[in-house]
Length: 360
Image 1 (cartoon, helix red, strand yellow):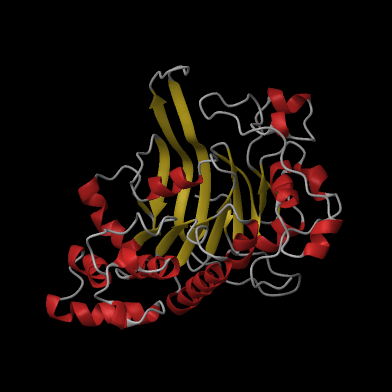
Image 2 (cartoon, helix red, strand yellow):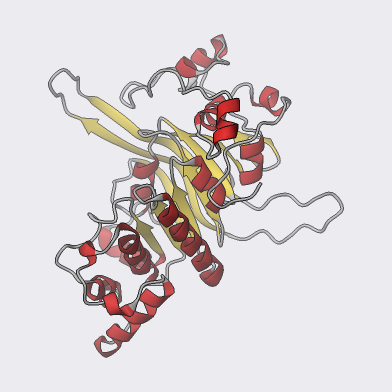
C-alpha cells in the first residue's frame, strides 16, 4: 500500500536519494463503527468512530497523531492491538494482514506491537509489585526461564531510569512519572517493533513530561523501534515526531513531515489547531492572535455532509458542504483533505508552537 504517513522526505536537488525505510504498519480504509442503542433523549444509530483511515508508519520513525477529543485517535490505536473490533478495512503489520486475526492467532503479534496508555495508574494491576508487573511479559511470551526473571526485571528497570530497589514496591504506589516508566518498561520487555503511545505524558507535570519524552526518544535511538505517538499537545508532537497526521471526526485530514506541517499547514483544521495552541512564552503569547476553534465537534453518529470540518471552517465555500474532499497528495510528502489545499500551499507560511525542549 502506498499512502500518507511516515515516509522519508525527498532529497534536496542534486543529492543522492536515500534508501527509503520499509513500511512497518500499513492501515488502509480502516473503519471502527459501533451500534449505539437508543437511550434517554438519544436515538439509536451507528457511531463512526474511525471512518476510512489510511496511514503508514515506516520502520524506525515516529508518526505523531493529533486532534481534538472525540476525533477517533484512541479508538484507532486500540483497534491496532485488538482492543477494539475492526468493522472494515485492512491493517498490515510487517506485510501480514492482522486486522481479521482471531485472538489466539494474534498472540505472536502482541510481542511486536505494544501499547503505553495515558492513565498510568489504571493500566497497572493494583495487586502486583513492580517486579510482578515486569515479569508478566516474559512469562506470557516464554521469553526467559523463571530463574532469570529477577535479573531481566532489574535490567529493564535500569533501562528506563528506575532503581531496582523499587522492584518489590507495589507499582501503583509509585509517583506518576515512575509508574509511566514501569509501563514503558513493560512495553519494552518483549522487544516490540512498534510502540503505540496514547497520550503517555498528558497526566504528568511539565518537568516529568520532558523526562519521559527524552527517555522514549533515547530508547528509540537505542533500539530502532517505531512509535505511533498520540497527543492533543502540538508541542509534544513537535518534540517527538518526524511526521504528523491530523484526525478530525474519524478521518485523517492532513499528513506531512513535521517541519512542513508546523511551518505551513495545508488544511484549515490543522491551521486552527496551530492558532489555538498556547505558546510557553508570555511575551509571544500577548502579541499573537489566539482564537479557539468555533463551535463543537459534531456527533460521530451524524457527521456533516461533504467536508466534516466545514461547519466550523472560516474558509468554507458551497462545495465544502456538497462534496467530501479526498485525502490526496498535494506536494512532495504532503497530503490534505481540503478542496483548497493548493491555495493554502501558496499562502505565507505560519509558525506552529514549539515543542518542549525543542529548538526551532
